[in-house]
Length: 123
Image (cartoon, rainbow, N blue to C red):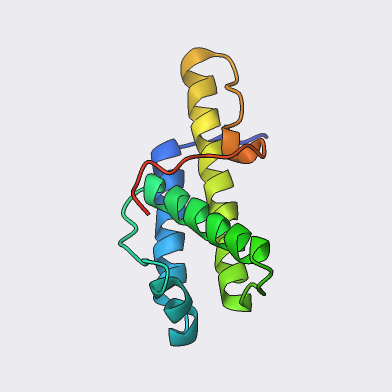
């Protein structure tokens, strides 16, 4: 017999992504944290928006380094990859929630379409 599907809990899933981001930073080596401390981070991660802001700032930093012809430190690239993936998961969770509430899919955010995004927070 087939078991009834459990409902997808968007709040729980979002909390798990935020928890994973907090855990990621808590387990970073001092060398890795020094890379982001130079860039005005880390600030506390308490919401999905904080995870998205980390992803945006880390991406922006990597683009700036690349544009200046500098190498991107491995630690910075690893953090960018982690937070970019976490931001994508957040997007998918929100998309699922929007679909459930409205019955239709929302377009992907500019950052996932490859468009430039302005940070709502000062640099």
